[in-house]
Image (cartoon, rainbow, N blue to C red; front, side, top):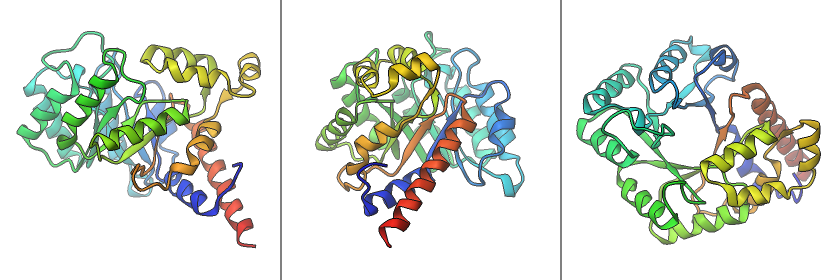
Length: 294
């Protein structure tokens, strides 16, 4: 990375070393994920088309891997894909049986709720009342607001979820200055949950821009479009890599007030390419650290 700083590089390497890799439970994803390094963190989303069952099924398949290939799993429980309290009780029982220690609870992208839960806050409250053995619960945070909630409402909801969660994951944001400013504002507002920064993995540029506009991060897409060489990547079909975004937040990663423990990589199921980028970045950081000590 440019402007290398040995101390911050070590912090960055530690964060990338334990980054969550988010996958979608479709197609041949099982065969591609099992080749990840042992104890890799893998978050399993819920598809608005197929519901929560493929998420639970893939969690069970990956949990059954032999110890030498075992992964650390974080299945999603998307509120709008849970029918009712009985369905939630069943889901929690299955996850407890699989000894799942961490889950992520978003609202979910389903345009029409499957049942009683319209947002993650109501589901989180019912989870607490039902009881479970899950140790860590993550919630979504939106630095640029949500398509159905402005910045003030998003902050109100985040503060309401805080007693029911142990960490948050930010939605993609391509503007590092806006991301850091948002983090400082929520800290000043009393949100203290550790913030895992959501980073897009290696992805097709055109698809990434289209997805970003759909999920409500249009403001920072303007920053993405201004990145040097992006037009050439669009023309030549070269994939996006999050190096510029990392460079922009690099100086803030060791700020204790921001409380950033690591990254959540949105792979868009480009598992191999995203993992190659992660490992290559770790090697560069390691080499830079060796040079700094010469």
